[in-house]
Length: 436
Image 1 (tube, rainbow, N blue to C red):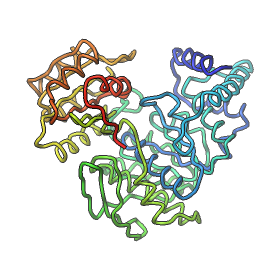
Image 2: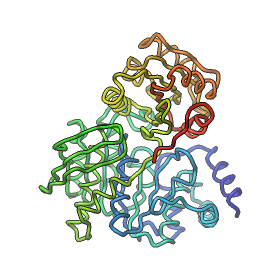
Image 3: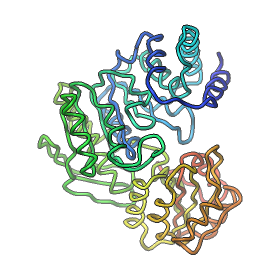
Image 4: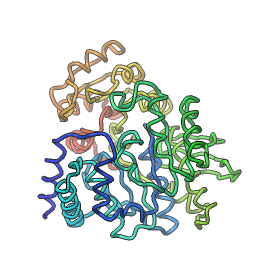
């Protein structure tokens, strides 16, 4: 199987849709000798902050000298980036080789009377196979959606479970209340395995505590940082851990006060590993976080005008976007380019973010679930008078660049599905300067 054949195969499987439940992924992994149980996995669920938190944990462990596999979806810029080892994406050849084995296992399962695995189940299996073949010391495993019935939850004994910020999202699948959604996220907590949680609303914490108690799992709640300082080149904080360890001047290049919470979750996770006997030092934590990157999360990609990309698409992410814009860009002209998927709560996202913009340009994402930009524009006009619908992304970029001039700020957000095209499109119309 070539890489092109492997991609064509998984895309065809993806068109068949998905079925909730773990039966098929359990069967598929059994055909692959249940190799997921031989990996040391840190399992991460949550609505917002999973990517940044996993980047921090991976960065710290990498700095400490470990080989770290990471499965994080969906892809932002390149498909293969969802499978990485020490931040290097899987090669096309390795992907094709692993997919060949996964396809054979899937066909054997189906031939024996089992169900046909979904595309995400097959990608999850491929990730396990890839990390196992490469002898990874640790695997950072992010859920795709939810937790209880997510295919990544096929694992029975993770090193620990991590739950980042939980808010309303994927209500059609996870529930219409925070309590219900938290119950799905807490489904990754396993018997006798610790759970580290970000600061949450009390109803979310109640659910996580209850699940931890049922599973006799140690419950670790992240503390509030002692000091948070935000500047155009990132975020700095002081932190006293739940065990009383004081860490000063922890710095990340990622923007936003919310990054302090994500850093704190990562720190509590690795400190638990340290307590369990893993040699990790303060310098590993500081350098690992400082070197961590997470593309597409308030990522600065251009300088004149300043252009940022963010995949925020739910109310929780919108709150964080607003907070970041208020801190960094209060005296700047702000232009939004915004496109969303139709099944997202875009009305709430707009109510939170739209009043801050001087101009909003909507587009229709090139995605099967993309919301018509005209519908989004009409919704945005409830909160902002200067709203325009662009016929295509290129028009949105040229209009935004003209409006922003050299001193304005352009924020491209709403859906991960078009960020890659937006980033490439910026090369043509603005002074390009990749942030290093």
